[in-house]
Image (tube, rainbow, N blue to C red):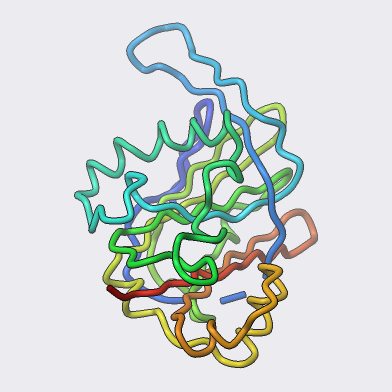
Length: 223
């Protein structure tokens, strides 16, 4: 992974085609952006980030976007992250939150997904590792490090829709219990019988502590 620093550092790129591992804790963000066409800089006033966070969004904010060209995603993602930094990541309706389908599942999704991990405080970026369904994602991914007064690092990658379809599965009894506890849901039979799930995780080292965040995408398909 290659690291480049200016006002914020960029560490490595590539879209994800694979699978992954493990636990969670969540919240918000901060950024200073340099306008390459001018000598002056544009300062984005962020919301205060209180803790680490883990989020998922449809690429281009469109659940039927399919798999757009990488250049289109590149053009969209940076302004989108800026918007999240100002408005709060949790206010943009993460796909880990309830959707429009039964029991809050995402209904008939047909788009690549942007996965975002927000780290508050010290972070060893070389230790950041994403996984899915407890298998490491053996692919490079774009990781954007944004330094500010709040010392925030944002890591993100894109899961292609074809990979999501390959990873989704019926939840095990253990996963159902974890999902209900994590998402504060009381009814588990629908998840077990009618919903497919994808577990996404990220882990990294912050100081002497290993931080693990995870959540589940709940997906439902039908007429």
